[in-house]
Amino acid sequence: MSDRARAPLMLVALAIAGCSANVQDGAGPRVPVPNVLGMVERAASPAAAIDVELRTSAGQPVSSTTTTRSGSYGFDVTSSGSWEVKISAGQNGDFDAVTHPIQFQDPGPLSVPPIDIFAHGAAALGPASGASVPVPSATQPLTFRWTLPAITGARARVQLFDLQGVAVWSSSWLSAGEVAWDGVGNQGSSTGVPAPAGSYAWRIKFSLPDSSEARIASRPLILQ
Image (tube, rainbow, N blue to C red):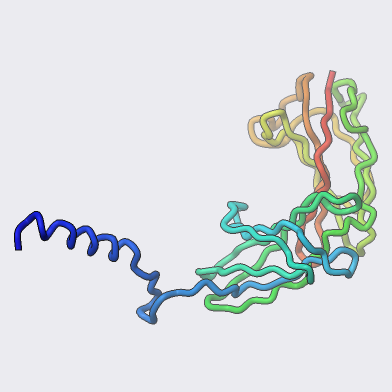
């Protein structure tokens, strides 16, 4: 057979090789089947059409889906280890997002406990969204206030970021509904440095008894 006649056959062979099945452990093609299964609820009722992400333990998104009419979701996880599921909402009365850690052992399956997106009354009270306030100091601190979710054992922490999303300051985990900040950063390069006047964003995260962490939407804040 001439080289010219042989060329099309080589191209076909390469194409077939490029489309070869994903074989795992010599047992044949791996067919994606959800092996991490869970449900999202809103105050004990199924929550449909909610965005769900599978993420690494470092928060890197791996896959995404939305909940069914029954509030269920599923992911095909291919390796053992620590992962997390992130639920994102936005409906009035919900948390903005909830993350739940999972420990997966291949091949599974793993059933994740139901995750509740309902905020149970959690809310930021002050400063108001977009408020302009004096730069805080030891003699004139800025007080952040909020309402804890009506969940026994819930705690809260305040996080402050600059406009680039870099963390400037964070409170400790608190069972109270307010905390005062003296204007000095405690995160990264801001540690020990008084925050300058400018635009910031702050939010509240909540630690829940089921090991989930929830948050409400960030609020803009101007220090002047």
